[in-house]
Amino acid sequence: MLKLILTVVSFIYVDARFSRGVSFAALGKHDLAVKDFNNVLKIDSRHINALKKLGIVLKNMERYDESSIQYGKILQIKPDDQDALQALSELKRLKK
Image (cartoon, rainbow, N blue to C red; front, side, top):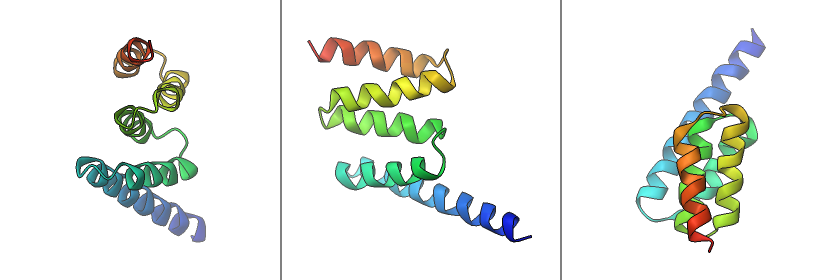
């Protein structure tokens, strides 16, 4: 029973942090968005949407290498993810 409660609490925390990170990103508060997405990924390192949003925010901050790492993690989980493939291609172009 305790394990179920902890799982539910973790899910709620992850969902809340992810949503808040999306809001911060939309408001241009990139540093706060990065912190929230990283907190999500500490609990669920395979959270594809957090990886994508983190990649976008890092790209917007011109932290291209860090952004590329996030998209690489997505491709390790889902090798055919078109968003990640397209983002990596764009990042490669931006780094030149």
